[in-house]
Structures are given as C-alpha cells and as structure tokens.
Image (cartoon, rainbow, N blue to C red; front, side):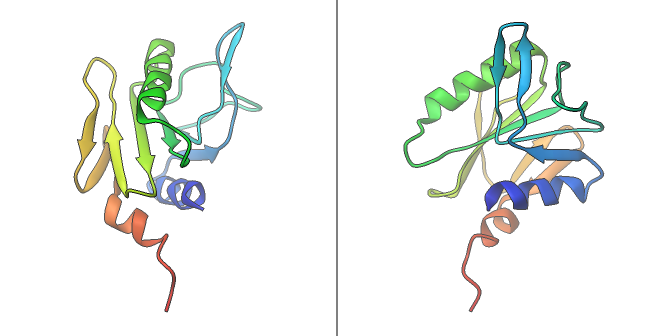
Length: 127
C-alpha cells in the first residue's frame, strides 16, 4: 500500500516512479528497491543509476540493514535514498556523501519532496 502511495506522489511531480523493479548494480549484483524514481527509467530494468531508491521497512527489517543497502545504491551512483518505517511512521534521508538523517516533516531528493504527514495519512482507515 505504501509503495503505491509513494509512487503516486512521485509521479505527480513528473518523475517516472515504479515499485519492485530489479536494478543491476554490477554484472553480478542485483537489488530490488521498494520504489525507484528518475526522470526516465530504462526498461526492463535499470543498469544505470536512478535518481532515488526507497526502502520501506517490514516488521522484520532492521534500519541498519536498509542503510547498508542505501550505501550500495550510493556506490552504484544513486544520489538520494529514503528509508521509510510505516509502523513507527518515521523516515530517513540518506544522500550520497552525507550521513543518514531522520526526516521531520518532508523527505527531500533534490527538487522533489514527499510530505510525511500526507504519506502516512494515506495509511489511516477512512471513517
């Protein structure tokens, strides 16, 4: 559900955003970010770095492991990485050449952004 909402929010800003797409980091290394976004995404899967990779924590996931995946994305050439915890309703930005930081109200990726209140509100049941 959160993947769909995030993809929709990024597409509204003019980005090509998709979920669960395999990216090839090297001839022998592949990962599947929960959401990727760029001005244009190569099909069937990107072999060149995208602008943004997002990981959404599952209850069994650990933040440290997801930040480690972000480091792999950065090594590949991805400038922006987000890690989102839908249970705790928290999120982190981990940009290339910077330390991970907890986002307070907005996730930023260059000129693009996602409002966390709007993102997490979509998870609430409708009365």
